[in-house]
Length: 485
Ligand code: GDP
Ligand code: ZN
Image 1: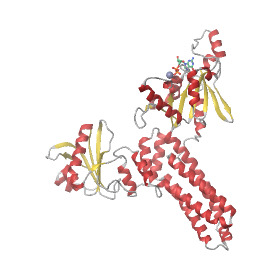
Image 2: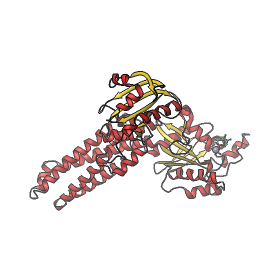
Image 3: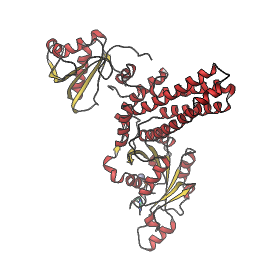
Image 4: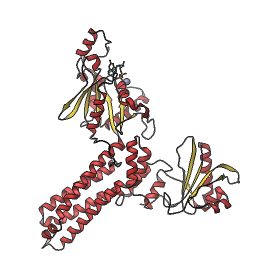
């Protein structure tokens, strides 16, 4: 792919805000003017590759902007594969801006410019320091919201996922060569393929691919998390349930306010799987323009829901019993557990729910209803959970039901982080192998199609590591990185 241009780039690599240290990173060729501009001629000349040197960082007039560590990584032994120069100064926003500006000024003769988001990693990819799946893992590691997700991103970054893909590609290539060689000798083709165990090879490739796809699905779940949307009338206990789900892990609950996706949700994890739980309190009709925008965003979230939790109260019988026993009665309790259409708001919400998304009814306040915590199943899948959000009974059952609906198979050391893009490529490869199998079975004149499907499967797999990835897709992938990475 083409870079916008190949001039040297610079950026602040540490996050905005204040911290103990901040890093300005420069990558490209001809960095001598930058190094000597910032360190002075003598210290620049003495700067040993990959050794940290402590001292002042200089302004154009020779005065000191900051002092800290300077590092030089000559090409190709650097993150980007180009010459890299790094300044580790004090992590304040002003001093970092001053350093960055000074670096750009010193680099003006070589056309040094600000880096675009992800451009350092993009160069690492273009210089074959990382393949595409590894480059994506860099961003996924930075964005990981749970320990499990971070660990799988590290495994992908180390190349475990890529190796699996490479192994598959190798096997497909081997089989392709076999089949294509046969095409030239139509007389003996079938015998030849059978002797070479071509059909056995195909079966093994398909089995391996199915295994990789299953693991990638788990990895995608770790990366994307499970989008859980809470719906229900006011006072059924949505906020209480959100807190109960966070439960013991409340310490690691992180509000993701206006960060990447410009929304507020609570990130909770269950067994390392991030749950993006969205409380739909705001889902009602409104005339307020600002609120309307907020609600539109919430609906976007609902549209992306993996599971919808429809909260209701555990029923009138229980409430009456509780009243008889002198217990506090919830004034909002509505008769019957399935009374959604009794409520205009819920009916409106229900009408807009996306089809095909699993809905679990949560029958809350079992303590008032005198019910026990339990799970109901329809067709082997959880369909309703009876619990008490306030008391906590049954919340474990709901967590387990959510993981079950998500297809989570438990944390393991074999997971690698994966993206929807990877799943699509794996599914495409799988479809082509199915078609290959189909054509192979029919033998005879179908052998050319057999070979062609193998070629298409190989291309799909190679998209994952970037050996066969369209330029515009690359642009999209890297533009989603943060600046300085
Ligand atoms: P929301 O409007 O749907 O978010 O409902 P809240 O979470 O604010 O809860 C409404 C009221 O119901 C609060 O007074 C909660 O304490 C109460 N509540 C929630 N869950 C339970 C429960 O399991 N049992 C009882 N008895 N009360 C509950
Ligand atoms: Zn609420």
